[in-house]
Image (cartoon, rainbow, N blue to C red; front, side, top):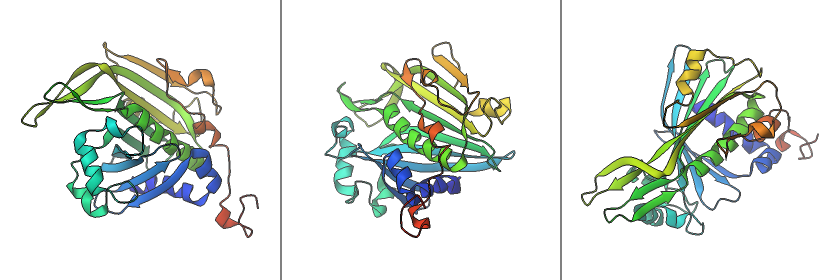
Length: 290
């Protein structure tokens, strides 16, 4: 699973035109016991983090569970949305890149800076690949005094990073979405007490979203069993709303891009599957057209 994600980011480092189209301003791999990557995007003052929590192979499938993080910048509009603990850590534990210094990573509690979770599942020959993103519309913490201690737009940030990753996947695999599912359920917030204990409770101000997609080479023919799809597809509950969409061709249709009034699909996931940009490092004159 680490090699799959490494391959996606590596494809962007070779082709300037691809980086520009995706708005990738910078990439950095973190070589540590737990594989991680930092990503900087145009228009975002902070940095994104993607961290592999666990990976396994079973029944001919490879899967990995990732934590999606966002490291805010004091110069960005989201700085005050993060908790005081996170802002204090950013002041003492981040280096000039705006991300945790290598020696400080192990001292930062894992739940801090988290904005979402991403699961990737694929068969071993990568005939198809599935992605499932879970995030809250707002990651809210309420302090002992009832005041809002954290209010981060988890879904917007997580979905922004996913859009770029899946654009890279479409480009490298030449696959497009063949099946998508989306669910919206009541969300949660974390309430803290004076002793530092926390409890997750239902919150009417938040929604829990899950977006699952399968990419393959043949639209209209999902290349996996119904059982495999059920492992990553959004749940259907009486409290929430769900949506499922199959794609019969390799073209983006704007009217298919939204679910429950929320934009969830990107035209990049179709357009980048059709291009064949050449690395500027592969031509004698340094351009991408030779």
